[in-house]
Length: 64
Image 1 (cartoon, rainbow, N blue to C red):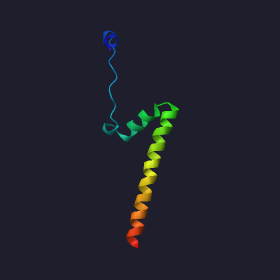
Image 2: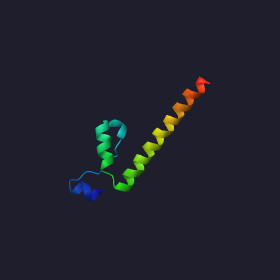
Image 3: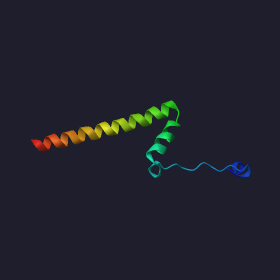
Image 4: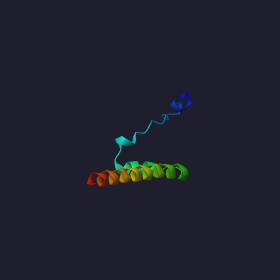
C-alpha cells in the first residue's frame, strides 16, 4: 500500500451500490468480467422470480 501512495495513486475504495443511481449501478455491473456479470444477473433474476411467485401465491390464497 505504501508504494501506491508514493506513486500518487490512491487505494481503491469499497463501492456501495445503494449510494448510486440505477444507471451508475448498471454501468458498474457492466464493468465486471462476463462470468461475474452473469452471476449478478442470475441472482437478480432469481430474486425477482421468487418475489413474483410469492406475490402470486399470496394474492391467490387470499382469494380462496
